[in-house]
Amino acid sequence: MENKRYFAYSDYLKQKYTQRVYKLPVNLPITCPNRDGKCGEGGCIFCGEVGAAFENLPSTLSVKEQIKENMAYIGKKYKAEKFIAYFQNFTNTYMPLSDFERLVNEAVMENIVEISISTRPDCINDDYMQVLKRIKDEHNIEISIELGLQTVNYKTLKKINRGHTLAEFIDAVLCIKKYGFDICTHLILNLPFDDDEDIIECAKILSALRVKQVKLHCLYIVKNTKMADMYENKEFQMGTYFDYVDKVILFLEYLSPDIVIQRLIGRAKEEHTLFANYATSWWKIKDSIDAQMELLDTYQGKKCDYLNGKCLNRFI
Image (cartoon, rainbow, N blue to C red; front, side, top):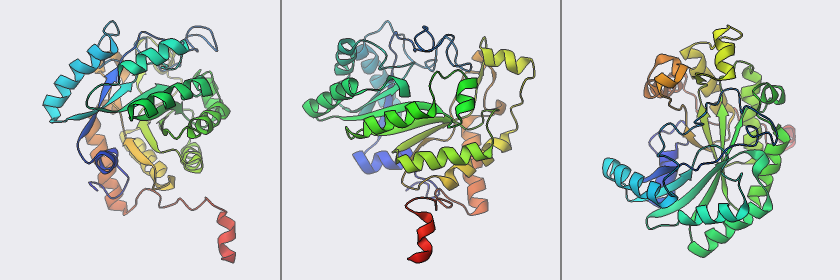
């Protein structure tokens, strides 16, 4: 493995597919139920009008057009031959079932080895999972689900206007697991309303639920959002670069060593934000995390001693 202190996504992909595999983002013209009034309005207080799609191609292009264009560019740049079609932006199961099946089927193409669907915990049910299971079986293609959680603190979930609670996340995980799909959970580790105990509990719950992967984010303050207003009014502080490094390491120490780390920190365009990654390159922060783990001689799962009847160990 490239990094033996945590289970890196690159190592996992090489183990699974035996070659370089890259994600190709797919952008659909959709929304979220906490934007259109179904379970709330305005969306998450940190989310901008474009969602997570600032690097995506226009949603006016078809799924196949986006995949072909991204495949040509990324394949040449990174010398990759196999790809994951990643339905990334907003809530990709929040649409009529027939539309969902048609759009996902469009991603079944040569050299696509996996389809990844990003969605919300309250937009998962058996009908949509059965569609994905049928596509998986008919085309012999891997399926994975990315669930936005952000935090296990139910008070923070309400404060950031997620529109769901921890219960919906647990229910979604249990539903997805019935169909054998891998689950990647998204977390924001430096939400100003959470503390270290919340970070530890995030790691514990994901480990207890045995999710397959996790993707970590540093909070961006996107312009023209409610969180941007709160930030400018000094209703909270963002801490320091070193605080984020410490939070990531704390999370990793309590996380099961079997869980794949898709990402330690994300990226955002500076012109869209008031705050992004402490005005530092994402790779510098990643390097700092690696260096600090080496210095502390720590690793993923070092403190993962709470599963499978911890208190019974004294009798064994």
